[in-house]
Figure (spheres, rainbow over the protein chains, first blue to last red):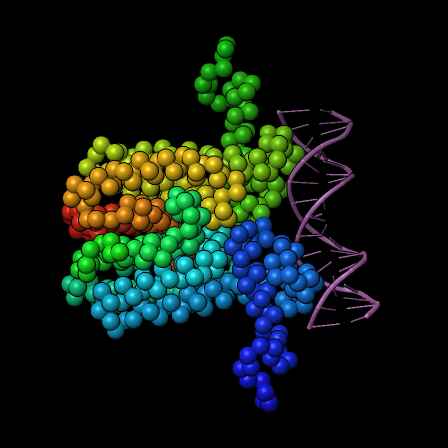
Length: 220
Length: 220
DNA sequence: GTCTATAGATTGATAGAC
DNA sequence: GTCTATCAATCTATAGAC
């Protein structure tokens, strides 16, 4: 109650808490992405947000709790993007929109993507429950949709899972392997390059399953 | 000189050394893959190869040296696979063979792939020189080949780099995200599933750039 | 809520007996 | 070459003044 509403800068009471928490979470995300869970230190995270190390333990009781919240936040973003895969749309629209959104995420949330990749690569010790419940449910619903497209003859016969893995892999690669890409590219990808890469990914996958890829593969 | 040659079991002198080194490297690869560089401990690696911790430091002076050798070994395997991308073959043959080989590697060298992914994701602090020299050279030569295919009208117009990234991403995903895949798959992928996934990846990419995908997408 | 100082546990690495 | 014991450094986490 009272003025707990969306003030602009300082905010009342627990609003500052939320702001500090976000500050720490952002710093933690960067450090975890750069060094992994084991390689990251509370000291490094503290320096990344210019806060005393003890404050981190005040807001997050342990390193593992902090890490868990970072991963959970990423997963939330991922879920929102997942909604762009509309089950009611046509294959072209649904897939193109989903791929485009995932490429955007790779660009905007590079650190988050890396943290997620790290977590899964190490056997998902912290978020195995998300894989087994939320991700499985989402995947099964989309698998069903794609299978319907196959049965209707809208797209070439593919096991929906291999198609989904290809979309995940290709889009997330631009975040997780950004360093390699930038090394080969002699610097960060430009706006035009991101647009072209997104168009190419869409075109190859859409045409690859028998859909009209729209215009040319490379649209500048 | 003398009998330093390929004996079968115990081996002479420095042959046992090589065998012990390989034992340690194998264990280190598993542990680094599971925990990352920072998360891995010499203690854990020692236990993984049933050797006293001190012996590891006898064969490899430091944790970082050991890690470097693990990464270098992976890169060597990667380079051999890279040769399967024959510059003289037709687009269909070259790409299909390369993709198939990379899928094999993802299955046979899962740990190595993860270590490599980890290293690159964290900014390649140890093997940046490989990226800038060896990988760049290899990539540029293949980019030139693909560009020639485009110019000749053999394949759809694509920036060769987006195509290569897609191949790397999709194939390596089956190693790096194996845990996620196995969770959704309720267990490890069967021989048939590997074969089918490989066929689907080949088919989508080949058809995606305008080539004849051979038979159906899913060949069982 | 914020910060300094420090405890308690773990780590990479080494010394030295065998 | 192999192993036990241990050091010095570092890390997570907390105590306690402000």
